[in-house]
Amino acid sequence: MPSLYAYRAQWFSNIRADLLAGLVVALALIPEAIAFSIIAGVDPKIGLYASFSIAVLIAFVGGRPGMISAATAATAVLMVTLVRDHGLQYLLAATVLAGLLQIGAGLLKLGQVMRFVSRSVMTGFVNALAILIFMAQLPELIGVPWLTYVMVAAGLAIIYLFPYLTRAVPSPLVCIVVLTTIAIVFGLDVRTVGDMGELPSTLPVFLIPDIPLTLETLLIILPYSAAVAVVGLLESLMTAQIVDDLTDTTSNRDQECIGQGIANTATGFIGGMAGCAMIGQSIINVKSGGRGRLSTFAAGVLLLFMILVLGDLVSRIPMPALVAIMIMVSIGTFSWSSVKNLRDHPRSSSIVMLATVICVVFTHNLAIGVLVGVLLSGIFFAWKIAQLFRVSSTLSTDGRHRTYVVEGQLFFASAEDFMAAFDFKETLEKVTIDVSRAHIWDISSVGALDMAVLKFRRDGADVEIVGMNEASETLVDRLAVHDKPGGLDKLMAH
Image (cartoon, rainbow, N blue to C red; front, side, top):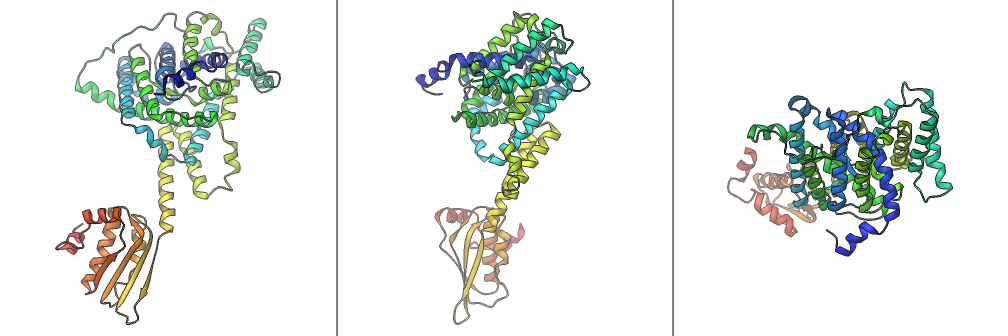
């Protein structure tokens, strides 16, 4: 956690903008929370309670100020089968367990694995989310009255043009107020928030999931909880990185893991579903001026206030106003420069980015897309490093002693080139393998070195390995068999 002074600054250094941004986010959260509840197959209040609880708690214990966390589609889709087969109580139990797993991940400092996610994967992740956010608005734009398109266009005009008049009030908030007023005054027949589902009228209460505490129950919910924990942390950490870039600040990844876990665990005990960070809402928050923890807290509190106290008014907000905001988010989220850079960037980077986008869009599963991107990044990286490997040799004047000089990284991808560089048919008395310019990394490279040494020795040559650095020597001493009795037999046995 940051120092007390820094923590206070994260709360109170941007009060006015944080409160206004939180209001905008709260309004946009309502239809999304209802929609995500419907996806999971539960009552709308489950998603609304979850969004309130997660936003408020993460404001206190999260590691990324200004980031919005709530019920999300990414976690909702993972719970569909569980709810259908076992019911709501198992969903709540799975939410609690997912939170505990996330706390464990934070304590084990697994947030640091984000360093292995390349910039190409991040760009693909962002672009895919932008596409998914836009696609999620299509049901509100297909088969609707022509007036809907007029209002969406008007909303976009307000969002993009109002900042030229003043930035004192977030333009998305102006969009909601203006379009809602017009719809109510003129009695326009457009879809409203109230059409998405009934809003709750009571505060959430503490409850313990009504499930049998048995091993069988654990085995039922564990796969769902593990999937939710992984996907939730993945989306949260990647969203945190995006907010870091937008605000030129840093976040505490391990604290964010713990914070997400605490929020989900507590939410399961008040009748809410699991959630995580929301890139769309986080960008709305940042673009509306939100920077501190107060914006996230305000979003959660105002969400609950609006559905309980102002429910009748909130239910009359026209969906075109919120669709316009989400279209703005999708346009602002998409990295348009990445399209232009497809021709200029290395081909491998472009392939990774496109593969991530395609996998996320077609599967609607962020974890699968990011996993594919990370795997491709690793493969391309290994291939590039393998290309920097070479072996040269010189023969003594008497033709009896050849010295092989190995340069580069010797690992599984370069082991084959290493073996191909040796001429085992050449009749020699002595062979020197100079690895002073190389590093030996893994079992494959140690095995290749064993095989080379033993093949030369089998043909009667005296083999000497020179120049090995300390790290390579430690690995070779532990794993190599070429200096052990029956080395060739042991090697061939594998």
